[in-house]
Image (cartoon, rainbow, N blue to C red):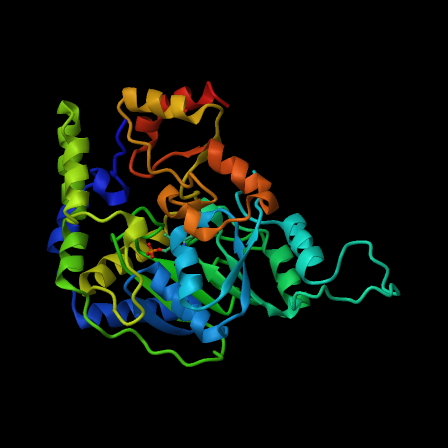
Length: 384
Ligand SMILES: *Cc1c(COP(=O)(O)O)cnc(C)c1O
């Protein structure tokens, strides 16, 4: 069974004409920057995508060779950014409840890397730190997986204890509130946003970086114009998606979408290129600002409702038969997609929960409304 690529806006929300015809100006970029500055507090840079924003943030606050703690259930884009900045990821296992690392997994990392094994006597003659230069761990990235807020109290306590710099990645979680009432993005040293396909703010591509605290290494704000081919792809993606969805009723949608991917008219999100010099598209800045303003009054809901099912292949096949396109769920591997997973060298034995969850998870795409999803929920519930 072929894969479908009907993601985000592409799946027939009434967004394709907005995406095609919105005209943006420099003023729109200034307005977006000012909005973000006011919301999160700090210096703002608008970027080609979320991964470029993350790579810039890491360059600004860390040195090559530093290690950074990352949620062990994430998108390849995050790994790409970490590598581009010359850092090494330390993968933290997740909890099944919210798909985030928690106090327990952080304690585990502490014992392994930071020389504070629980229960070790302070008078012990064992040196306080394990040999593998534990102090190389300099930071921690918060992900708020699928819009579920991390246990911020535990993270901040842990970060303070070990002098770690916190980076908040809001690709899944713009507008989400932590348990103590603070909004995600107002806690760490830097906040990054992605406006990519199917993200909390979705304009097909684009991203932003907010430097909230003093930086260590200077970085240059991206200023290069986006390539025409990239711009066209962003403009047309929703339209192509809508056409393919329409054609799917006569079984031509899948083949057409595969053709569009093959000739690079449509790019899968994971293949979006990292580019630290390229700025956002002006029309995407305009659309992103519009969505951000709406978000403020929309209240909280998770980005994607998720379920852990038995026999996922069968569930997906049933969903397909019922007319749903569910294949783009997050995540099929602890670091997704599958085709890049091998490159990551992910330590499955150190992250058993993430490894297992990746085998069983499905999540409800955001492009169906509540009513449309009722039948899908029924199908899924049989396999819980
Ligand atoms: C998608 C994603 C990014 C990067 O977004 P792009 O705009 O596609 O580069 C960063 N972090 C997380 C958690 C993501 O899911």
